[in-house]
Length: 437
Image (cartoon, rainbow, N blue to C red; front, side, top):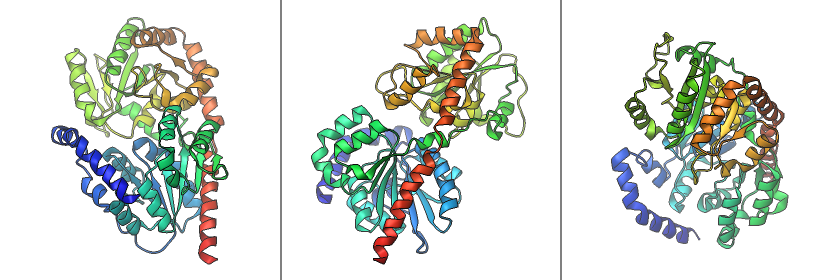
């Protein structure tokens, strides 16, 4: 199996190499960490203490680890915790969020890379965040004596259909997994349907709820308000995790609403780092004054601008605090098909009046829960966003009631971190029991 997988991965690399090379030359994408990933050059962990290796793909998965890492340090202070990630932005956020931990690029799923990384980290438990079914990594972890868990596990209906077609070749990998800690009953049933033994699957809830900030007066949000020159009288419309075309929709909605609400301010937070510059140039071409977050002097709060510039957050890892500024929040990745939406629970936790587009397949259950409680609203497209923003600003009491319903829903979901760590504790105990038997 490892040889066959190596050949498949190599073939795919060769097939897509023209695209990969073009992007590496044009934007530098894929260049950072390439050697570490290909060779499995993880750091050498010093000592023989028990170790929990979290693998989180990118920024969102890294940030949701905060309550787990904090609770793990309390429960198992004598354990090492290490975090791997796949993307440069994910690694940058991991290093800033967890400066005391070992953080590194996860190896590509080639047999030699996974074997070398596993030998250097020597984990007791490998915990894959959400859905990371890498056969060689899982196989090597089990051979080394580690337990394997998928935590905060999610499996959309679309992904389930895709994996179902691969159920036979994936079967051996699925049977190696010791624990699946699923976010909800639907995800749990899909993992069992793929072949994970039902006794290894439990429903723990989503850790994302535990890591959500709900206090608008938190230090980071308070500092942002000052540094961005926002006054208490300003109404703030945040369009976050936006993708191509969504900034234009948000700008159109903002311009239309400002005619009746001159204190309205717009904050744009593009999803991808490589689009920051293009969005800034586009806004200026549209005749807008742009205040870029990366160029703010954090020690000098900005005075009010006569022209009320559009605020462009061109930094990483700050969106969670930016949502705390929002009276009305539009969650991107949702207006056009094929993107699946982004996490709408962060602005909901603050009590913002949350909106998103019709394409939210990655968060179907969350969307259903919010809509059924009148805790968010779905917009049909760019024109509908103009209308709904105007409605929320014209009827602030109704918008605030929707926001409060979302906040109450989020707060009621807390506790997933404790349930997830209970499952990891069971793996730890079984690992110790096997070693002493």
